[in-house]
Image (cartoon, rainbow, N blue to C red; front, side, top):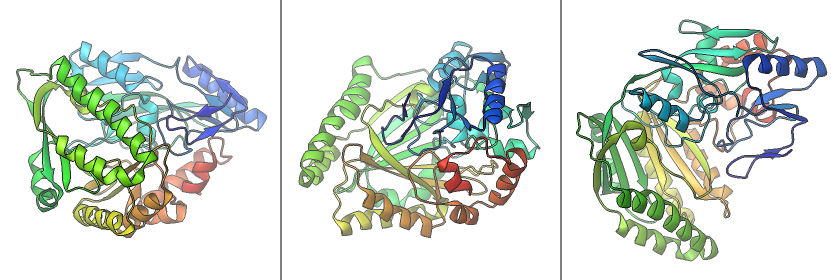
Length: 425
């Protein structure tokens, strides 16, 4: 059986595929792999653009390792293979919610945490920062839990699957809340002049700059006492299904066939951007539908360097005369204490570049990557980049501590693959 990711740019054929339904099944797979000299990896739903999930040994599919193990007023323990969309619905049924999340909900809980999925937030960080406890199967087949104050906890929250197989996660949750979502069209020049003001004034800021134009779609989300004012069914379909997926997909396909039309297509898209507001359940506001397949590279830079990163990216696109259909997305997060979180130890800003899947443009990613690495950028672990362990050791203060812990827990590299060989050495 060949495994392929969502973007269809990564694939591999494991020697064996198993679908564990319990922690004991995972333990058995790990011990079998060790005894037979094979490697073992647990995959998620394939939403990483890198080869982080691939293995030539035993591949564990987590589809049967799902559901809630236990509930509390401010904690929930969820099995590793549970999709985020299912977790959101289960939490909402009990009047609970995550404080923050990314915009893709097809990922498994473990996959999203292990690769550092983050979302955007002034005060609240990514999923790894909402973890209260982890349960892992280690390379020797033992089952362990890790909590705050332990090195394994700070290392394994964004662990890339390199320290063990994550089987359950305890997350901090809070009473369900509403978000006031506001969408506005603003000029890029105005965004660049008011970045500090916008990030400090809003709990969640997410904006998209449309290349070849001066237009940005700016989304701000702030907690609201209510009442709820969700977008009507027609408005939701028009914005989230028709315009952002159907029409956008058609525009990408047209631009793919006729690249010289892309600046004109983007100008039409910019003219169509409008303002809107709604108040809705938090997870419905945080998340989005993504039907158009793309390739993505994303870097986290120190927050104070965001303006420079954005200006240089804009100037690079203009200078090289690349035709870029997809918007450049910008988000922010507070510092994290997970060792391999892209936000470790510093307020961070994220700049994400996308390319329509059928028309890859490696030069675009290479050019932006040169800018990001000059600014001490850290690549998202699940998105395309070319950095190796020697570079990453320079931008992660606890990188050597992570690799030393890995040496101790998995000296035989039972959980290794080609991607981890590149990024961890």
